[in-house]
Amino acid sequence: MRIVPFREWPRCDQVNWLKAIQEKDLLDTPAPLARFSKSQQRRLQSAYGRWLGFVAKQITANPQASGADALTPSNLRAYIDRLKVLFAPYTIAGFVTDLETVLRAFNQDDLGFVHIAATTLRRLGQPVGNKRTRLRPSSDLYRLGVELMNRAQNEPHPHVAACMFQDGLMIALLAARPVRLKNLASIEIGRHLVRHGDHYWLVFPASEIKNHRHLEFPLPLEMTDLMESHIKIHRPILMRNVGKWGSTPHTGLWVSEHGSKLNRTAVYRRIYKRTREHFGAPVTPHLFRDAAATSVAIEDPAHVGIITAILGHSNPRTGETYYNQATSLQAARTHHAVVDYFKQLNAQGV
Image (tube, rainbow, N blue to C red):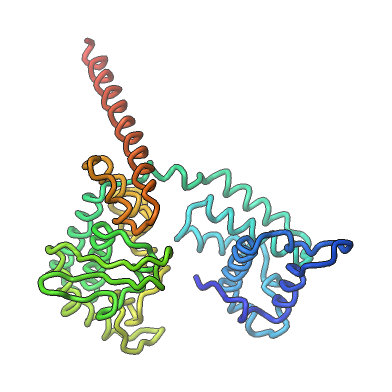
């Protein structure tokens, strides 16, 4: 779902936003959003832009329309259903709460159903802090990617095979080199993905990395032939399939079903779908990073310091954090094993 940037908002919404964040004299009543920090205002602006992206078709016909005009219980329900494809209920609750905050700042009334929706979602969901229950070892994630690529070899329909192989390669690459979703989706052949000898390398300039640190590392040797198969066999099949969105030649590594460059949301959705089908619960792209760090902390605690390099972080305390998390996970598994053991003894009457 597209987040409409402020410069493309309906004119009336732009005016309302600027009024809502306007700094005033000490003796004047402060504008409703002026008390928020700049980062909080950016978050609120993003939340409203996401809503505008959802209702864009309903309001573009009327140049005087506002995104608020499309806010109805049925539209909000459909909006939440769309978000559920990508986000957990607790995260969606935050989006809906931010939307409500912006609309109240725009002097909109009758927002009770919006507040109820956010409250219900927050009650149903759980914070990302409980993510460790969904963690999978990196080896399991990598194995899933390889399994999908192997299955693609037996798929009779070339287009279906190409999509399956690409999904598998995407998952295997992320399991082996857990870069951030933004960087994973942005990979271009010849720019971010280059071949040196027997290895493919990923290269990201500092300007494209969250903490502005240059990243450069090789992919595992066993991925060289897999990458070659994608670039020379499967990717061209997807590039030829010009669909409803149309497409122009591009160097993106990941290609949509319509031949265009796969965007960040689509990459997220594919990984979410494949991992949920295989494991019963989704493993989001960011959890691949947690999985890599935790796997190192469990399997090779003597080298926990490499976690900082794997994730591209600058703070060495990152390794300690994941070591502690790994210790908690290992303790929980040991406890469960003991519980299961005594259950078996009881069942045998011992």
